[in-house]
Image (cartoon, rainbow, N blue to C red):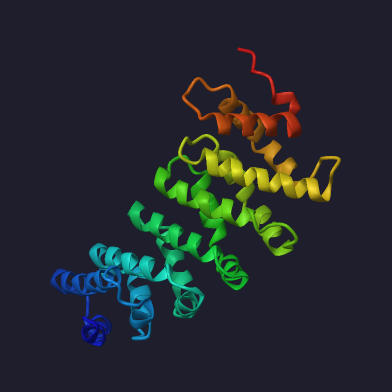
Length: 271
């Protein structure tokens, strides 16, 4: 199987995708790479062919065809699960601009997958985190998170990304400023309204308020002020006193946040 890799890579790099037939053949070729990876072929064997820039070109250009974009995204997603050196090569090949372009895709699956790949990147080294911040990825991700009209799956991945980054906020002024400027705090507050994102949003809010505590033990930190202004206390209270089937752990966490940071909202709202 391994001997086919260079041939497939050359075909993908050289084949045009002007017609539907071309797009079908190219998507099958890319799908073959994903199949090989699932069968145990090393990620580095694919990456070393130099095919990644071509895959990113497909992702960034909607005229490549939806079938090609989907298969390219599946392949890149699998490659992103590799080690730090694999991700370094992908970043150098233009991964983030391609992912950024997909956030405007009309296909929710592509948008969701792009956000998932960014989540994988920020679990790695600080250089990968910085690359995501420098790319401008965070602002549109926060917009997706706050937009009630966006697909829930996309908002879920956006929430996962921002919640993961919130763990790294302590002592990182660049991250702190990005969270404020790109309206990530407001996004987490809005995510409390969506059942699929409540748990991750709560975790992110806990991290932000924990940072405030470390800097201003007496209260009144910058994140608390933004959360207040973006209806976070009201959203937490809505979960805490919801009649929906909400798990006990989340109820206790919301109750803690209300009691310690927003005590005036810790009681059930009067009807």
